[in-house]
Amino acid sequence: MSAPTLKPTRDERPGSRRRGGKRRVHSALIIGAGFSGLGTAIKLSEAGVEDLVILERADRVGGTWRDNTYPGAACDIPSLLYSFSFARNPNWSRAYSPSGEICRHIEDLVDRFDLRRLIHFDTTVLGLEFDRPTGVWTVATDGRTYHARTVVIASGPLSDSSFPDIRGIDDYTGHKIHSSRWDHDYDIAGKHVAVIGTGASAVQIIPELVKTAASVKVFQRTPGWVMPRLDWSTPGPARALFEKLPAVQDAARTALYLGHEVAATGLVWDSPVTTLIQRIAAAHLRLQVKDPWLRRQLTPDFRAGCKRMLMSSDYYPALQRPNCKLITWPIARISQDGIRTSDAVEHRVDCIVFATGYNVHLDGPPYPITGLDGRSLADEWVGHAEAYKSASVSGYPNLFFTTGPNSGPGHNSLLVYVEGQIDYAVRGVTTVLERDLRYLDVRAEVQRRYNERIQRRLRRTTWMSGCSSWYLTKDGYNASMYPGFATQYRRQMGEFRLRDYHLVGGAAGTADRARRRTEAG
Ligand SMILES: Cc1cc2nc3c(=O)[nH]c(=O)nc-3n(C[C@H](O)[C@H](O)[C@H](O)COP(=O)(O)OP(=O)(O)OC[C@H]3O[C@@H](n4cnc5c(N)ncnc54)[C@H](O)[C@@H]3O)c2cc1C
Image 1 (cartoon, rainbow, N blue to C red):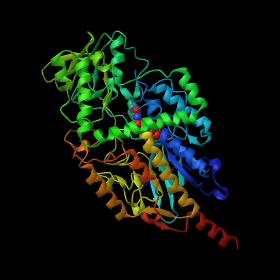
Image 2 (image 1 turned 135 degrees about the vertical axis):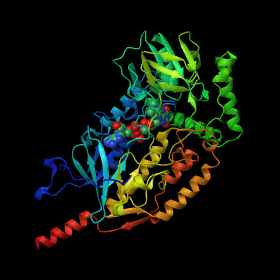
Image 3 (image 1 turned 90 degrees about the vertical axis):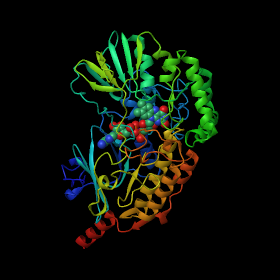
Image 4 (image 1 turned 180 degrees about the vertical axis):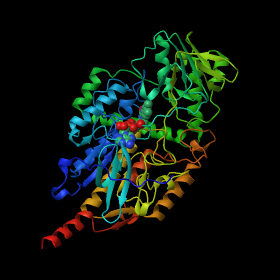
């Protein structure tokens, strides 16, 4: 698919046009107001970049945690680690905080760091186009057109929900809910419900649904490895201690971080630690499920770590409630009244919950991005997205990705990785602005060498050990995960090497100033 040329729409805020009708060019533009976008704004402001704007398609901040409000929604990395080190929260109510609390924390960041004035809500980015002569990105939205010298993409790894490609999905006349856009107006109590999917969201939703629904049928394609989730409410004295002595909270965070790093030796690479993790998960299954037939249906046939590990202590008990049934026959089609499985059984239900995940954009950007000389990122990423250090793409200057290609962790908090991406983007943006560059473009051979190394290292990881997962494209290419420890990733992101980039001088601002001087005199 080639990227359309972006037609200039109405220019941003008529009131903000410069005198003489000149367009306004921001120093930096951020797409998305979730953790990544807001964290980038905090760090750019601290670095002295004040002329920045954040575009957010929703009417509130929060990203993942604004959208995922399904019953039981919570993080599955401990809250102490699932937050930014530079914006800690001593008041987490639980070891694994619920979605609403994480969303309130994100709202709190906006107030604490005075970010609201920077955010343009209800603004969906439709595409970006770089102009070589001026070194300016034009950003088309569903409203106005924006211009910026640098752009940070923070539109999220899992922000676009996806429905499965099942025959008859549109024929169904009952109620449909996607886990990431829960319909709170629909009362589940007393209803017959089907849940499609048994991944990370499903194992949180099902234990809640069985409490009130008349019946819950769980349609499983492949079972995952489930580890017990040791959740508890944070005792008041611990919160008071974290508040008074931040160093104690930092120490607890570091301990959790290191614990997760150790887990990488089994979750990222296939090793004796993988076998140990698998044994713990198998023991958890044996302890919680006594029926050997059900246990067999719930036993995965792939190595732990190959797909995302599931964390739950109440999923197996929920499946064994009298009103819950696990269905392992493949779905043949969705009919008008429910789900037909390939054993020719028609499961009539009032509501289908699709816990079927997201469009993870492994082989194309979420919107058209046009770089130097009309290059289209959608064309270049067909089959395999790649970037340098997950952040820069050759031919697309002054553009920095958060949660870009091969930046995903299998064992640690994504926010640890995002902090590294933010630092990297801030170095890139400030380099362009302070040196008054027209553009900064990563060298193609540097990007190629980096990705050859990443793909070589990926071959030895559990993700490539033979299962199919959303980490891989349908051709088996891994464009999502980083094959290493979080510490290695953070180290690479802490180093911004100018020699890796083409630096092209004579920024738009410089050219404009020169032209104005000529005109004036
Ligand atoms: C249910 C669920 C549970 C998770 N649990 C964990 C966990 O326990 N631990 C962990 O490490 N990670 C977890 N994750 C991953 C999670 O997505 C990240 O940790 C984190 O929230 C990503 O933040 P983000 O800001 O990069 O993206 P998001 O939170 O997705 O924010 C992106 C923002 O960009 C906006 N946007 C998107 N497209 C456009 C556009 N075209 N124009 C304008 N705005 C746009 C979106 O509306 C959104 O507000 C979970 C994800 C999900 C879905």
